[in-house]
Length: 114
Image (cartoon, rainbow, N blue to C red; front, side, top):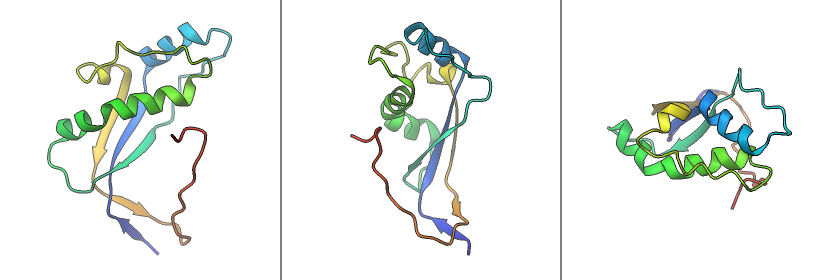
């Protein structure tokens, strides 16, 4: 069964400049950033201006992307701002999310949750 969810999304894929910042802190780790996977952030369904929505969520996106790779607690990323976020991430937004799974959505708290 196809279910259309009442959510929009922001798709965020780290680019090479982001991984270069991670490498500065995690030099002992092997960083493979050639085929980075996107993270999908579900957001409100109805929005008209991508930049307004991105501005609303960009700080939380940066924090989430940082938490996914920061094992040392030293990664700051203070240089990433709303004005240059697209230098560090490929970003796309949309308002159609389709769920093909028959089982219900589950919310899981993981080590990235506050």
